[in-house]
Image 1 (cartoon, helix red, strand yellow):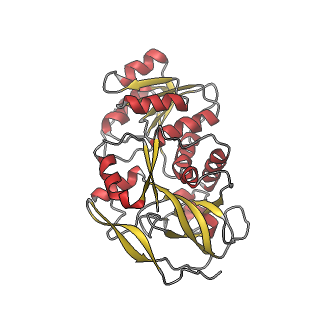
Image 2 (cartoon, one colour):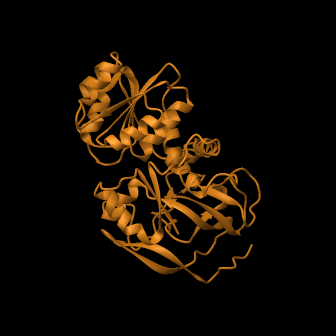
Image 3 (spheres, one colour):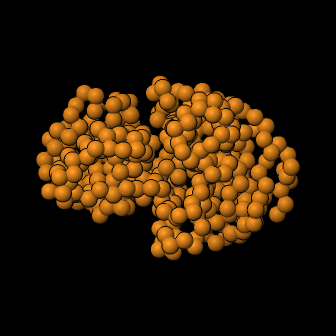
Amino acid sequence: MKSEVSGAQMEALVWLGPSQMALRHEPIPTLGDNEVLIHVGAVGICGSELSGYLGHNSLRFPPLVMGHEAAGTIVAGTGQLADGSDVHVGQRVTFNPLITCGTCDRCQAGLINLCRNRKLLSAHRAGAFAQYVSVPADLCWHLPANISFVAGSLSEPLACAVHAVGLTDIDNNSSVLILGAGPIGLCCIAAAKARGVKTILISDISDQRLSIAREWGATHTINAKQQDTVATTLAAVPTGVSVVVDAVGTSHVRNQAIKAVVPGGTVVLMGLHEDETTIPTNYIIRQEITLVGSFCYSREDFSTAVDMISRGLVVPSHDWLIERPLSQGQASFEELIAGKSEYTKIVLIP
């Protein structure tokens, strides 16, 4: 399929350097073999892109179009989608932004998220804060007509949560503590509920976020500004929770996770806020606590996330998510970084 927009220009939100973004006209991406051109319908702002915007991310170099949580309509391209169906113009899709080689030892072992040659749309190549984005066809998943592009854009963060929860042996007899009630923390609630977990605790410093977490299915909420997270967790589950998921990534929170989990339990680390942390190693040894890192997702995790979105298990609503035009991108980044947003998630509409 030839692109009818080939050689034309598009509007794109371009990161120009620390705390600098501008809406500019950029060439519409050209397509390689087995790639599709997607007209972006919605694209979320990810927490990892906030650090990129500030210049704190070693993967991102300006000028760059970020944005990897997206959905839209195929307008050109060739190949097959993730489900093996042929590409055709007009298909509504979301996409996995993690491009892997398929040939390295990690890919051959089935650990494609750990591909030694992995590349991320919005870091190694242009992302979706634009009217159009090019994506390998086999990384695209079909979206049913009744699922909005905004809902489809949530597939990527939900896939991260599905993967994190899936790294544990959590089931309907387990209890889980989630540290951080941002978008990933909320998605972890959904992922835990999908596995039958009935006791779900979550901590945050925002009462508003905790209120939303209760609506998502958290059975206990902890305001970490007003309560001791570990003591409150142990009061609710005296033996300690089976699993703790850290969706924040600070030293203090990582240590809370270790002290709150049951002896022999699992702590999943997925927050990337701080690079290095001092942890109570002797305590971890004596309690036989398993620490596991969680990075991105497998194709199966992404497929599960799309299915959960399609079944309405995660639904965008205006009590926690707001849609804004692409032109408000920089203001939205600044608002999120300053912690002044009334909303847990901001999704941009090109």
